[in-house]
Image (cartoon, rainbow, N blue to C red; front, side, top):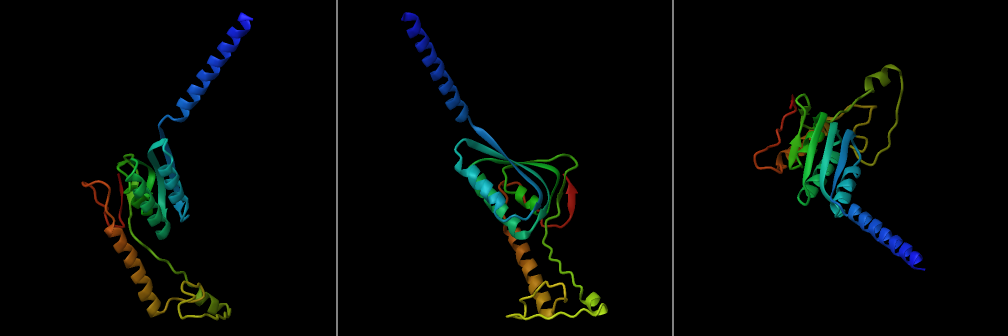
Length: 203
C-alpha cells in the first residue's frame, strides 16, 4: 500500500513538473521573424502579420528579413504604415539581404534599427507608372477593337491605345502625388532620413 502511494505521489510530482515546464516554455519571450521577399504586391499580407505580432503578448520584438526589389505603391505604403505602427509598440529590426530597394527600402525605414551586408543593394526610392500600347501593331495587323465605356478614362492603361494628353497629365499628377507622400514620411530615428532619389547604392 505504501509503495503504491509513493508511486502515485511520484507520478503527481512528475506531472506537475512537466506542466510547470510547459507553462514556462510557452510564456518565454519570443522574437518573431517576418520575411519580406520577392515582389511586394499583396495589400493585406504584411499588415496582417504586423497585427498578429502586435496582438501576441509573447512576441517582444520583430526582425524583418528584407530581400526585395519593391512592389506596387499601395502594397508598399500599407506595409510600411503597418510596420511603423508595430514599431511604436515593439522594437522592429531590419536585416537587409541582397536587395532592399524601392518599396522594400521604404518598408525598412519603419524600423528602429537596420543592418545590411557590405554589398546589399538599397535605395532606388521613387514612383513609376508604365503603359504599354500595341496600337500601331494592331493597326498594322488589321485588328479592330470596339470599346463601350461609361467615362473617357474608364479604359485608361488599355493596351489597344496610347494615352491622351489629359491622361498623361492625370497619370503624372498621380505619380507626383505618391512621391510627395513618400517625402512626408518620417523615419523612426532622429539621425536618419529617407533619401528621395531613384539612385541605388551598396550599403
